[in-house]
Length: 216
View 1: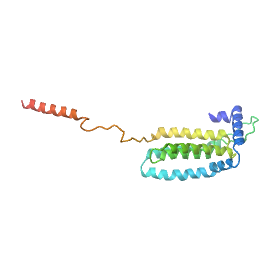
View 2: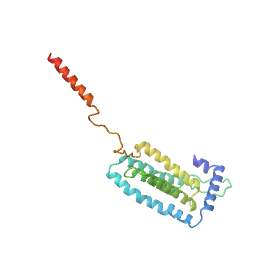
View 3: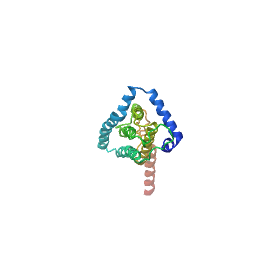
């Protein structure tokens, strides 16, 4: 849907062009250079360096659900690459945009999927800081691909939507849920004497009464 609106329509191309100009006008060197290097060079490698050890730990702990979810999400960059390679050229509506198809961004999809995989594979319940950092890195990866003139805003938006879709599918298929920590100190607990004690006593009394009646 985002492809049809942002790439195949004149209104979408105008909005894409305006957003692209706005970002380039407000993000100047050296910030755009740093963001571009993070998105194009550092980000993908760093994501793999983080995800690979977490995957090994998950495999050692037999967390198959997390591994299945990660495998599904890892398909997002592959799908993005195939879509970009096979997509038709951008229609010419007289707007100053590249004529070749750049939708979606493979690099943005790679960074975003690595961030999601990090959350899936985190050894324990991911703390809030991990979720915030993962979301921030995914956003910076998308922004860096735009300010480095590698992609348009619609390209990275399509990548983020693609990763979001594969994440939803991964959670549905693998049954992955964010682990919940139960505070044993505050959790209600039951003592054997109060749970089933009276019932067991009543059952014992009934058994003795039935035994006595049988003897009679």
